[in-house]
Image (tube, rainbow, N blue to C red; front, side, top):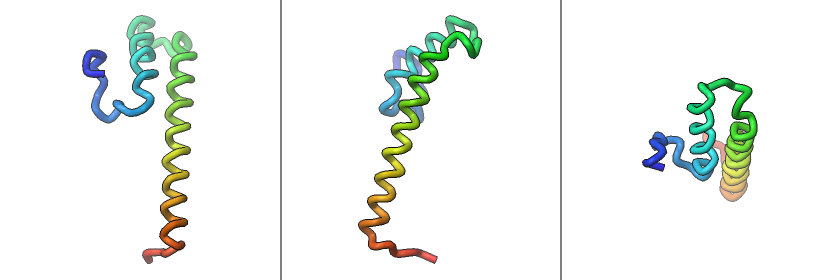
Length: 70
């Protein structure tokens, strides 16, 4: 990841898809229609990670017993 010069906030479980996406973007001069497959794979991974975080948060809220802090 450091060799690919990924910024720290992007070094997550989807970084393995971001590296080829960034490489494709540079090679294709950031033309949006050139790297669609790589971008779709990366965005899908990010979405799946988001769903997992939401699910964990829901589980934590349920374990708390529905307490509200108002």
